Amino acid sequence: MKIPFKLSLLALICLLITSSCKKEIDYHPDWDSSSMSGKVDGVLLKCTLATAQTYVIDGKTTVQLLGNKATSGFSLLISDFKGVGTYTLSDSNIATYLPNNLGLQEAYLSTTNGEIKITSYLTGQYIKGTFEFKGQNYLTLATKTISEGQFNISLVPAKIPETNNGTNNLNAKVDGTAIGFTGEAVSVNSPAGKLLTITTVNGDKRLLISIVEYKGVGTYDIAKDGTGVYMKDQSQTGSFYADAGTLVITSEAGNKLKGTFFFSGANQNTTINTSVNITDGTFDLPFSKL
Image 1 (cartoon, rainbow, N blue to C red):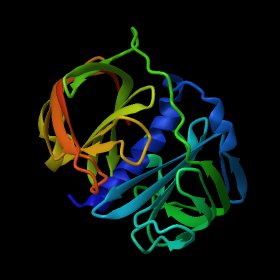
Image 2 (tube, rainbow, N blue to C red):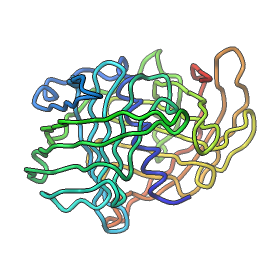
Image 3 (cartoon, rainbow, N blue to C red):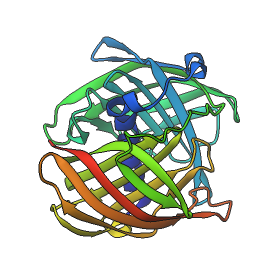
Image 4 (cartoon, rainbow, N blue to C red):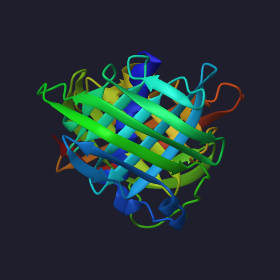
């Protein structure tokens, strides 16, 4: 599976996290300094939460900008970021509009028609710019025109308090340290087949697993059949992608998904030599089939 496809999956999954799992993410006052908005077919969508993350893949800096209001929002992904300038979507960049949190099949995606302009950027401080694109839903072929998009996002990391309480429904050891997460699982139809997504959070940590061509109870190779991601924080050195690992689904009865997992992976910033080892993973998650 090619990295650009994994990046597009991650962009959609992260956008789902900020909407469907927002209740698990504590508000942080520093987010008030960031903003994102755009018109969807002429109707203004002013996001109440806007965040950004940068990471390095194969020597190239990738920037992901996210904004959401309640269950809808935007995701902008620049795959070879070089600072101030204009990035066309036809150059391996991705823009997405998600109208609700019912699943990935609701997304309007563009990889060809539109552009993202970075008008001002200071490393570790802020990123500002504009965007416009025409997104298409790959199931219905319906389109949405996104115009007059703009963003002003702080790049200063906001530390979110961790939670270790009775809401945790996914547990694992991260390099030997036990950590609990709270989240959910969703199975949806997508252009690539049935897609399973597991999205969980704990403070500013994230643990995500996605499987393409999901077939229910069984064993899946995380690296070959999808992707696994662990984010220790929201910095550009905080993301690790699975290069080996296994997901075992033991039950999907009663609106619950149960199973086990493990995976290991290198830091997506390829300029540093660090890795993570996720072991003893178990989960009993709310499960929706859409």
